[in-house]
Image (cartoon, rainbow, N blue to C red):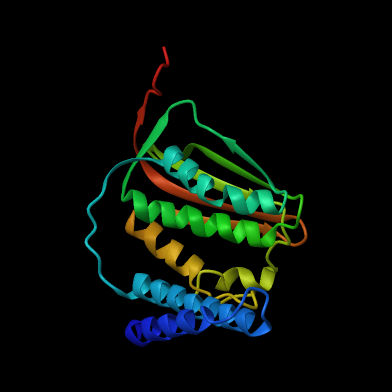
Length: 219
């Protein structure tokens, strides 16, 4: 599928170069390019769901990975006058994982939050230690939470949000949360969404805590 897509994109770009800026036909061609990119994005999601990839985890700083993801969406947030708060952990919370995969999870959740939040809304991010008690011991997890002040999710949709191809967006593919769920499962973690219609959504990703590393410069 990607081979003909590349040909289509190249041809559209060639034809587009023959039109002046502001021409209505040029805008139609740009819209076609955006649709080609959307198909390509859908393919990426499908491949992530279906292909077997080598899983070679290493210690990853959960807070730093979230912070890098926030940098990538900061410009989009400024365009909508969305205020982003990030409560950095005092120490580095190290998890066992693949940094790029975890960044993809955080990016998907942040982009969902951006799409849900109206102008002048807010997104709050936090990275902290989450503890779970059980008979004979305690489990410690790194919890990354992303809370938005958006429209929320209807109760009847909550059971379907991680299903592939389920979406409430007009231009959505329904693959983002399914991909997130798959990646978090590979990391032996869990992802939880709590939502109240017209108030917002809290997405929490919990990953087994490998160890806590003292932050640089901390006494």
